[in-house]
Structures are given as C-alpha cells and as structure tokens.
Length: 339
Image (cartoon, rainbow, N blue to C red):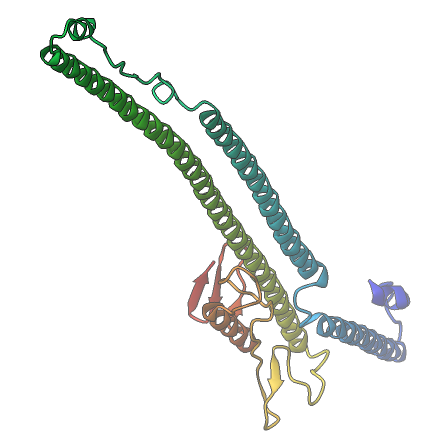
C-alpha cells in the first residue's frame, strides 16, 4: 500500500503506448521500487536499532526494586509482629505469675499467722495436782492418852506418799500431752511453710514451661517467615531470569534479521569477558541473596541454592535454558529441574 500511495501512476494499470514510454515506465517503476525498498530497509533498521537499545537497557536489571523492597518490607514487618506478639504474651505470662505468687504468699502467710495466734494450750494450761498431807485424828488422840501412835502414824504416812505419787503421775501425764500439743502445733506451722515453698516452686516451674513454649513458638514463626521470604526472593529471581532469557531470545532473533549487529567489542547478553578478553558465559552468585537455612535471611547461604543459581546462570548464558512458570519445570539442556 505504501508504494502505490507514493507512486499512483505506476499502480493505475495504464499501458505505455510506445517503446520509449515503456522503457521510461519500467525505469521509473524500478527506481520507485528500489526507493521503497530502501525506505523500508531504513525504517526496519531504525526500528531494530531502537529495539536493540531498549532490550539491552532492560537486560540484567535483576529483581525490580519495588518487588525486592516489598519483600524486605514484608520480612521486617513479619519479624516485628512476631517479636511484639512474643513480648505481649511474655508480659501477660509474667503478670499472671506475679499475681499467683502474691496470692500464694498472702494465703499461706495468713494461715501461719492464724496458727501462731491460736496455739493449742489446753494441756499446757491445765491445773496441776497439789497433794495434801493428811493428819490422822486417831494419832493425836492416842498421844493424848499416853499411848504410842506409831502404828497409826505409819499408815497415815503411807497414805500421804501414795497421794503424792498419784499427783506426780497426773502432772507428768499433763506435761506429756502438753508437749505433744506443742509438737503438733510446730508440725502444722512447718507444713504450712513447706506448702508455701512448694506452691511457689510449682508457679516458677509453670512459668518456665510457659516461657519455653513461647520461645519455641517464636522460633517456629521466625523459621516459617524466613522460608516464606526465601521462597519469595527465589521466585522473584526466577522471574527476573526468565525475563532476561526472553530478552536474550529477542536480541538473538533481532540480530538474526541482519538489520542490526552487536556492538563491536561488546559481549552478547549473558556473557562477559574473561582475563584474555574472550566472551564467556556470565555466572552470577546468588543474585537474589536467597537463603533457605537459618532463621534470619541473609546470614548463611544455602549451598544447594547457590549451586542451582550458578547452574541456571550457566544455562542462560549458553542459551540452553528455558524458564518454567511458577511451580513448573525449568529445562536446562537435557535436564529438567522441577520447583
């Protein structure tokens, strides 16, 4: 359509009437076709040059800053949330422990105070027996009559001794019972003290188990977050690698048209110069800073991931790599790696 628009007379279908006219017609037609072809070639070359410049600028940009920034933001936000949750739960656990210790201490202190103020004293304060010395009236009468009272006095003395012994036995029994009473009181007070100590120890043990459980949950949450972030970084790097592969393919197809050639002295995309100045496949070590082990991302590089990224980069540079979509296999030469 462009040729006929520029040269309507040549596309009108009119037939020259003479040989000279036909010769001129053919000459003009050839010149017009040559100019149209040259114009088309110039437009194609200009378009190819612009396309090559754009593709080269887009190649090797890696993961977009907006994507990596969002991943980093999610990581920092997740760590902050997990840390805040741990702090809140630990504070609540500590608060409950303090309240439990206060209630336990108060309860046992009241019990010990009650036992101290209400000591059993029934036997300790019981009236002790006081033996009375008996005086025999018959003895006095016999003495008044001039008769010796020795026989009767002996019986009186025996009665007095027996009365004193009975009183002593009674008082001894009261002392024994009072001693047991005091021992029972001390035992109850000791049991209260031991109960208080045991209750506080149980509270401390429960608190220790609670803090251990919180720490375990925190570590598990951080590990899960680290895995998620690592997977996100690896996925973003896969997408960046697939984009570079598509750019490589587009540049290869563009150079294949012959409209544009690679700049002299510049290696094709995916290659770099070695010490001898030769273009060799470019190897990138873990460009996404991906880690799959450890809680904090960026601390310890996973050897398997590093080797995989190196293999992908080598395959990209050699042109034998085709990136799969999310969850699909990537083919590298005759090998496939499934994600």
